[in-house]
Image (cartoon, rainbow, N blue to C red; front, side, top):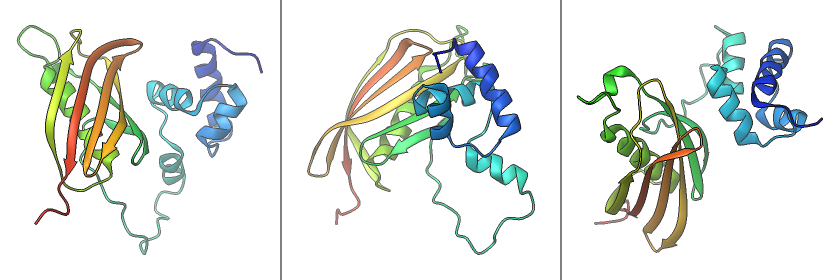
Length: 187
C-alpha cells in the first residue's frame, strides 16, 4: 500500500477499527505501511483507545476478578509505550488550568511529564534525580498535545543517564538530561 497522507490514513484507520476493533497496533502499522509509534500517535490524536481498552469496552461486565491489577506507575500524561531499561513515550494534553499568568503552560507540567517518564523507563520503584539539566525551549499554549520521549543513553552501576525530549508535533519545546540513581538497594 502506498503511503497515505496523515489525514487520509487517520480516516481509514477509524473506519478499519470500526469494522475490526481487535486489530493490534502492529497489524495496523503493517496494513498502512507505517511504524507502530505512528499508529499509536494517530490513535491518540483521534481519541481511539489501545487494544486492551477496546476489548474491555466490548466486554463490559465480563472482567475476570481473579487476575491481579497491574502495578500503576505515577506518570504525568498518558503512557503510550515503554520498553523498560531503554525508552518510553507519553502524551500530555494541556488544558487552560495549566496556564501561567501569561497564558502559556506553566513549565512545571513539562518538567513533571519528563521526570515521571524518566523514572518509569528506569524500571525501579525508588530513585532520585542527582543532576537535571533542563531547557524550556518554546512556550506552549493550552489545547496542545505534547509527546515526550525518554531514552536511557548510558548506565553506570545504579546511575542512569536519561534524555527526555518533549515535542509539540515536530517542534521541540522542552529538553531534559537527567542523571538518576536507583536507591532501592541503599541501606
